[in-house]
Length: 71
Image (cartoon, rainbow, N blue to C red; front, side, top):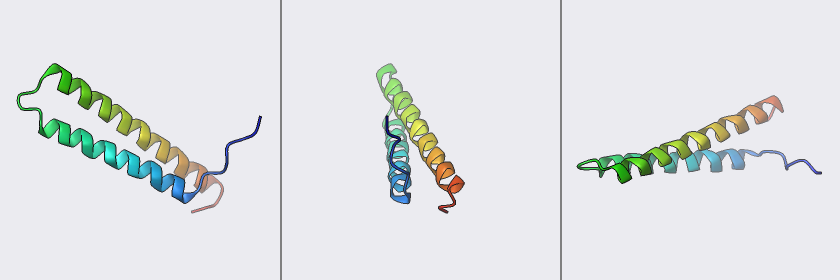
């Protein structure tokens, strides 16, 4: 079993861009919930969860790069 390829700064940029896009989508969904409904709130909940996951992945990638001295 081979190990995954090393993380690059481009990989980190991609992860941060994903987190940014998800955060903005969640914010837009919240702005459009007038009045709030259950389905809309569930969508926003899923978007914010996905944004949190993407942010965690980006932070993990940054930690891995920093540990390798690729700052």
